[in-house]
View 1 (tube, rainbow, N blue to C red):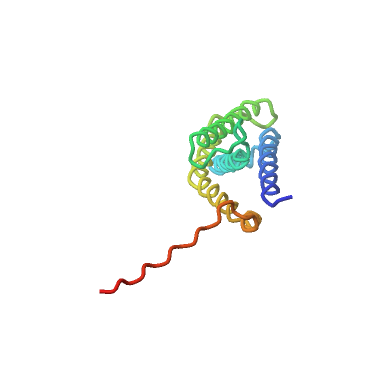
View 2 (cartoon, helix red, strand yellow):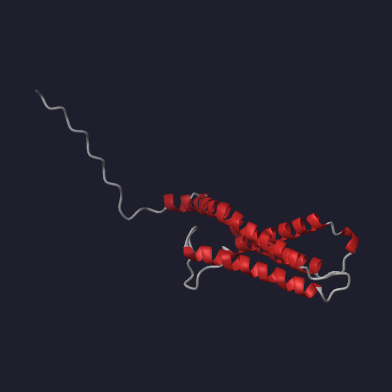
Length: 172
């Protein structure tokens, strides 16, 4: 199995695992004495930023309906990134509503705001860095040894034409 496929699968598994962890931790009864307000909001923001980045990384694996991949910086890529961030924000809001049904938990609008802020921060980080990572990954695939060897070993249909000889000096 090519390394790229293994990495892609690991990214997808990480995104799913992080989602399950966020859901389980959000819906498990907790000790109310461990909630320090600033730290609690930072944990929410960090968890949802990480969740957004992981789903954005996993989402770049999904081809368009015609089978092609959207290029970095394209409108399709931006639309997918915003849709992923909105889905993560919706998950955060849903989990805050569900927390009202869990013992020793309560849904908190400020937690939902922290979740949304984390998702937006993850989206911003992806848009700043993800495009670079995607482009450098594309360049690396173009330079991969498998691709270079196959290109070097296959004869080209149009052999290179000999370069013209330099003009000879004219006598004066």
